[in-house]
Length: 289
Length: 288
Image (cartoon, rainbow over all chains, first blue to last red; front, side):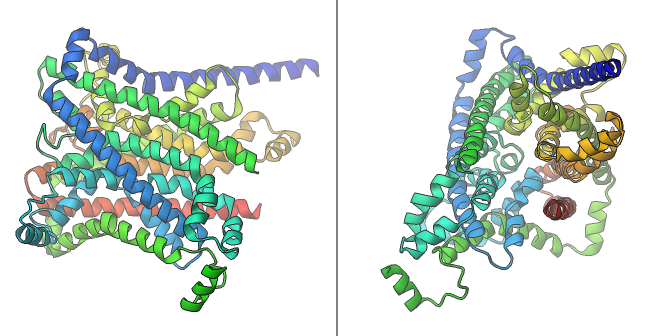
């Protein structure tokens, strides 16, 4: 009896060892090695070259555009996320599931299609082009959406659209809305209910969603690439990396990796923040139970 | 109290359960933003592609390069998603069932492909698996070329898809009823049979969801695959998103929208499938 128990335990440990080894190898080769490769490639021509390639005019301009697009996407999607989660979790109405599915559309379609759809709407061929021309003619403005900054901002908003609502909705659903109903019956207004009851419930999920949204917005490539064609003006960091990498000579390839290394560092920061907030969120939801 | 009185005085509340204010406002803003930012632009693609005559549509879609690009995207995404199902299950199992040093780091690193810009992933994988890269050098010694072939393309899609599968399985595995396994053991099943007959069948909906998510993402993927795939029409290593982008750059909007329409239909079918699986899954867990 003892003997069989022991062999069982041994077999169990063997399986455990093998599975852990497979996991660590997989993650090491598939996920960590590429990150290490970015950093070594970036530094392969020395540190001064690294610093130099990060301070070119193009890269600085791309950084500004990227940060602007990220900021706009986070602000717009936070507003949308709060509104959508309020509508979808505090009330029941017909077509609720359809609405929830429609919000998730940007998750499952190719970013290139996101770019294409704005071109087909606001571009020369698009049905909204006359509207834009009319606005420009009447107000003497020079508003342009496709191949200009507004297009970049719109594309970034499109691909990150569901990120925040998706984080908040499950949390609010699991918390229920008894407290809100009680507050409303006692005469609290909508904004007071939100500020005092709903916001504290969704706080961690909201921050977590904002981080995810920012991470995705920083790195969006396909959608923006369809809508942005001027290097140094409307290029974001990923597009600048693309331009450097494809220009072919070995110096610009190293520069491409240097610029990439900033995004790798940002990705790691996001990952660490994510873990912290996920932990907080779990803790706070455990406490409230 | 005053606000309630004025509410009931002015607005007819149709359903008595809507005591919380802000329904019209929040739903209105949600629908307007969703329509303006997502639905109307997508509808423009549909609108434009419906203007094409059916004959023209068919000619554009059945172009050899386009068909091969669809084939490449779908087959590579399918294989990558299958491989991810195997490694994803192992990873999720290890992360849920075992304790070992560095587990939280491993758990965090799995999310890396979500956070890393696709273009960065693309250039570094392409370099890593090229003949001069660390991995490419090892494989070229045994005569296997990875970068600029279908193998490289599949590797990039594995990179992109792994978190979908792990994150789909992990919560289900965490909430799995331990009684199921105990019962299996008590009835004399060995661990292997228990895993394949009991646990795997419980994981199947989650595994399917993870597979579908990774597959859907893989078919439309652009940034991470265009560098490693080589984009050669001759070797059939062009992916479908690349073809759309190429048509856009040539201002060939008719082809771009026609291909995009087919791709949208594929994506929506997968989205629909995922929803069906999830509804079934939630029904099943409610009955238990």
